[in-house]
Image 1 (cartoon, rainbow, N blue to C red):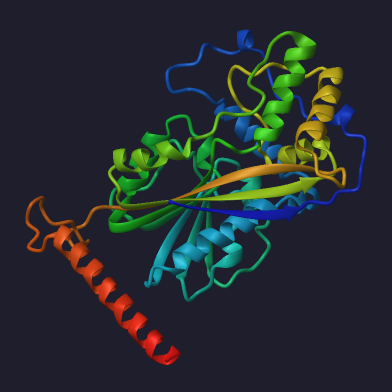
Image 2 (tube, rainbow, N blue to C red):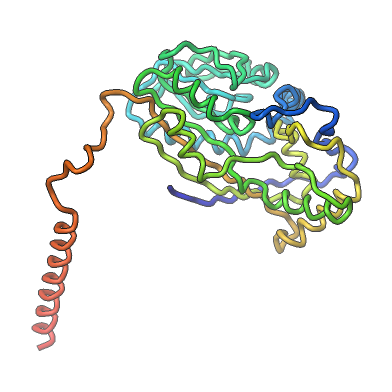
Length: 351
C-alpha cells in the first residue's frame, strides 16, 4: 500500500455565506427507520446532485477536485497496455474522466450517473471519443453478465449503501480478465471539519450528530474487493489538502459539488451560533499561519480484476524448489566478500 500527499489551493472572494449555507438535512423521526444496509438517503443524494448542476458556471468552478482525481485514475488505466472498445464510467457526474481520455485508450465511454442533470451539464461539448450517457443507480446496475471490458468509478461509490453488493454487481458485469478501477473518499476525509463541528455542537447544544457522512476505512477496502470476488487487487492512498479562506467557503464548495450530507439520521438544521463556533474552532485547531484553513481529502484508489484462467496464479504451498533461507544466507556471504575486497583496495591506495 502506498500513500502520497498533495496540496491544492482554492481561493474564493469572501462572501457572507452564513445565511445561505445548505442545511444538512432532516431529523431521524421524520425518516423511516433505516434498514441494516441503509445509511444514506439515495433520493436525497439524487436531488442534491441535480441541484448542484443547475448553476452551470458555479458547478464548473468546483470541478477542481474530481478533475484531479480523474486524471490520476486515467493515469492508472494507462498502465494497462491494451486498447478498450467500451469503458463504463460509473457515477460519472458531469464528466471528469472524459476530459482525460482519448481514442488511443478506448473507442467509447459510457457515462452513468443517478442524476440526469449532471449527465447533461456538458452534453454540448465534443470529445475525441464516442460518449453515451445513461441514468443509472450505482446500487442497481443494468449491464448483462460478462459484457464489459472495464469499469471506472471516480468519487461516487462512497454514497452507496451496500458497497460489497455494488462491487459484486460490477464484477459480474465484467468480462473475464476485465478490470475495475475506482476512487473513493477515505475515513480521514474532512477530519478537520468533522472535529470542529463535533466540538462546537457539543459545547453549544449538549450533544453531537452525524454532520459528515461516514467514509470507508482503508483497512477494509482490500477485504471488500476480495469478498466481491476480484483478483490481483491493488490499494493505494493519496492525501490531498485544499486551502480555503474559511469554513463557510468549504461548505459552499461541498454543496456545489453535490457532496452535502445524505445520512438518513441527520438533523434538519445547524444553529447560527454553532456554525460560528465551529468556524472559530476550525481556525484555532487547524488554521494556517496566513489565516486560511486546510481541508484534507483522503483518496483511496482500488484496482481489481475479474478472475480468468490466463491470469498469473501463485504456486501451491510447499511446491518451491529453492530455500529462501539459503538464498538470503548466500546474499549475506556475497556482501561480506565485497566489503573485504573493497577494504583491501582502499589499504593499497593508502600505501
